[in-house]
Image 1 (cartoon, protein in one colour):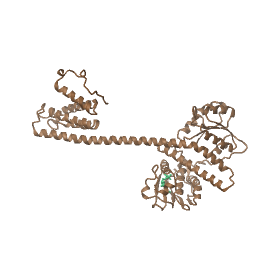
Image 2: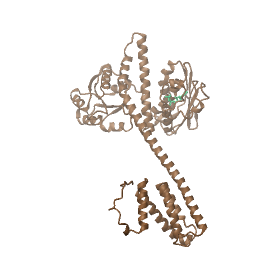
Image 3: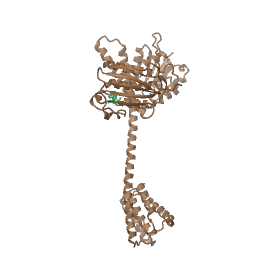
Image 4: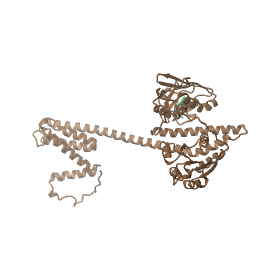
Length: 526
Ligand code: ADP
């Protein structure tokens, strides 16, 4: 509570001097002056009076026990509480008044402030000094605690903003990636007669997939740090996971002429894991090994089972990691820091994702390196599934379907991002599909009636009527009961997939949709 006071005393506010006893007038003047000349508030004064009153009552209650001794006892406690709650000056004032009250009420002879006894005078002075020192210490402690709390609050806020920013930026980056990926796919399918166009095309393809990987990592890390990642665990063979990871880094390792030696046991080792997320762990580690190992270098992946745990080692003879950086590299945005590392690109989030995903699988990951230039080793330890778990026939979808030439599907593309929508239409036309494009949900609903699509690819973040509402409206029309409705969105957040399903979507894809995945989807539509 803070009060504002006028500079001048209004005569009407105070009772005539002769009606007030002199001491109470002086006290009132002192209180008003105190409040006016400092940052004090009336609450401070009320709290002081209250604390002194309570201290006096308790001292009277304990009087039969304490008698002449420790006259100040309860006042000291009041001073310490006021120091913590109201600060230095209110505490000192409490100490001063408390000492006077203690002397007046509880020192012998009682009800006099004579203090004739030297012992009493020394006791009172010492008591006041001790209270002042204790007050200073408590106020310093209180300030430090408040400062810490404020800093913690600010850091927490900055952390929340960072997570929101990461989620937003990864979403925003997805939209421009859609047309680029689609165009690159079309280029990659067309015949290139000369060597230089083939080189440019391959370069574009590699860089776009690097960019998509970075955006995926950004989104993943923002979801992981906010605890918004759901694992879809099922019994899965370790070999399947390793195969998937090796396959994903094979082109990059071949380009750098590196030797990749993989040693996985012949017998089946089953883990209870999310196949996609665990593949991501090993492909991140292998990808780093490729990135931080020179042209012509070596990378080894080996496994070893001990009782009910499996250890997977990813080793390389690359640039190595300095001892001082080893324990930090799993932290967000942490890069081992030398110029060579930074020249390899990256954001310093891959290992954070690895660490968190392994942890979510009840495993551990460690980094080892004998030093700079001497290679690195990452060791992942995971629990093996209990024998009761049965392996499902194919945890990672393998049933590749191809587009048949004879039947072209009618596909309605709905996206307010014109470049995204147009490039998707171009890609689908290139896949020999019949396409109609709408840039908002209203025109899409109208177009659907005449175009009669077999498949609808709809963005979620549409203006005015969003994708969920659009799907609900479409499903209300009997002719679209069995149409394949696919939500396509830049938000790879948990919860959106469930909301999309509830709105009537059959599938949910994250932008930019992989063209091969799109082919599969079209082929699966009846
Ligand atoms: P990024 O590779 O994008 O920088 P990561 O989180 O994947 O981010 O890795 C963090 C840091 O750990 C890297 O910047 C690099 O300094 C170091 N690092 C990771 N893997 C290796 C490796 N195999 N060899 C040497 N250094 C590595």
